[in-house]
Length: 162
Length: 426
Ligand code: SF4
Ligand code: SF4
Image (cartoon, rainbow over all chains, first blue to last red; front, top):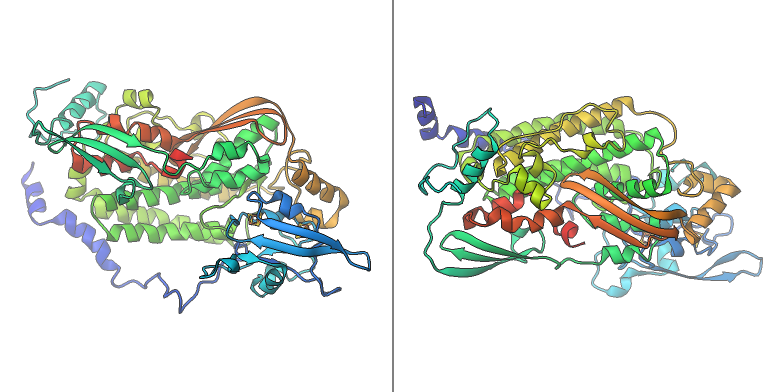
């Protein structure tokens, strides 16, 4: 070991070198946010809790109870009971989605042929009551408030998303 | 075994910049295993399953003689979820979210491995754009995994701040993933025949920004620990696992490359776009914990290079194969045209049709070689799926890695082979 090495070791050069990196972060802007007060905006594609979209023409949900989402869902957490309206449309009488089993894979959105079920930006899902995890048709329709406006504003035929 | 060296001999007796021979490595290994005070009395210590250094729920029963580990009895299976069995009851599409949960720290790599195997089984050709997007996502995954590994590994050795620094940087990559796939950890992004979605509009710009500063951050990590004498003392000459040992225990990935074997499936059996980009396989020769760190840092730099090349050369065209029998149709086609809608119904109610046969496909995931074996009797569901994931083999090598070493080095050695228990127990 050379003399220089001994001097370096005695002067803690290696440790100080490391500490200099840590030290510079005193002067740098912080990257954290104070979460409950300040919230981060998820990206448009974010897969949060689902919503059912309303069809402006009928005022009812766009869903036609075709069961594609319920069949595709890898965790089998969608339960649908279809019915026929007097004017010949089919629609879900019951549409329950069990969030506690959902893995947020987005397959339901991906296969829906009517673009009726979509993933929203809603990510604060913690609750004290287990029954809140059961998204009924009403709750799913209410979740539309969290739908990303840019992504789902257009009529289905214009949606460019893959 | 060379037994001439006294127990106090320096284990750092490595000549930098020169490739050691196998004999030298073996001698160093023997010397490293003579350190520590022995009392001649055995004590059994149960480490884990909730110990923070066991990276999940790994339990090891250690037989200690003084400070020296005499025997290790690993106990795995605490995180067993029966993924392989679950696969038998799902169509090939539905298995993709399951693969996310194998190695949850590099979920896309797992999706990718599975889809490569299914494509081989079904004979699906992935369009160029799909292959490039896969390469980009896979390399982002590799960077995130190695950064996370580094933070945890160094935290096991006793620093706390460093962990926060690495996690901050991993967050930028997770942001990119959120932007690209919609999820931060469980991406479910690869599809049979390509990827689920195209790159979003400003992805190119943001991704370039991130890969421009990641190498700078790596230099910063190196400034903190690469010259730190405590880190050297804890890692150099410790946990030596020569190429021979790696072959015997099927240890792959950075641990094998740190033993001087330039084995990297990205080069040896190219998939995705790896044969169209230039990169070097990171190799080091001393086969110890420190060199595994060096290999991973080199790999992060190479990954940044690969991503930059992919972004530069990103071809146009479809990102998902237009293969009606095997891949889901695009959403916009489903909304517009009847044939695509029928294809959609077919894929959901029947599933992609696979021929009879069996395939094995291995790819290089961040932790090592991940193989997927699929046996199909024809139809939409596999008869048997088997994942040979790197963590399992690395976990089983832990006794061979640690026996004879000191108890204080156990965490360093265990972390250096990068075991994630979701991947190991499946
Ligand atoms: S996101 Fe996935 S798991 Fe959740 S309801 Fe949709 S298909 Fe099912
Ligand atoms: S796939 Fe769409 S239209 Fe069909 S049942 Fe589900 S939400 Fe309704």
